[in-house]
Length: 232
Image (tube, rainbow, N blue to C red; front, side, top):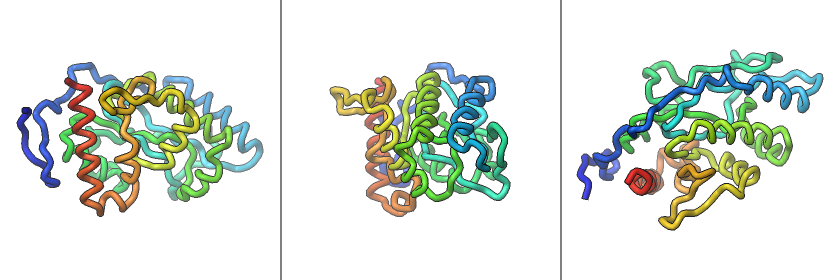
């Protein structure tokens, strides 16, 4: 039986949830073909219409834990009509005060689950504050092409665990690449061979989870169960 301190939810924080031995490296997205691929997607969809430029993190991490959200919001300083805009990746090393309040839940959850190294990324690059707009377009090539780009990035980064923090993101993933979701014999879902949590985490992007202790406990228990199984 592994020992460990309990977090504020009363759940055990196992000692074996230490930083994995695998080397964690940064994959710099501006140095990939992402700019060209997104430009092609945007030009094909918007053509001569004005648009908000696609937004992507500056880098992703290999062999780290990924919190996968749905898409970036529109802000007052959002740029228009340029190929792509990169923003500083929000991750375990990001100092307090240098990230939007939206990301606070990931820092809290990582602390509760004793996750040492993690980063955030959106499934899509299109900016839209209203997710209903994304849902209405979810069957289009515009949305599916973006999701396929992110899937390729995930496959290259090989995170140790993907925690999908938005129900719409999980729906689009299944629609685009359902054949690569598998259920292992120990009842853990994998996506392209990578452990993935969807059902327990799908409300992470809303107040439903943050204000519901039972849901938070279930998510914490699932993170602990999956990590114990995959790190053993």
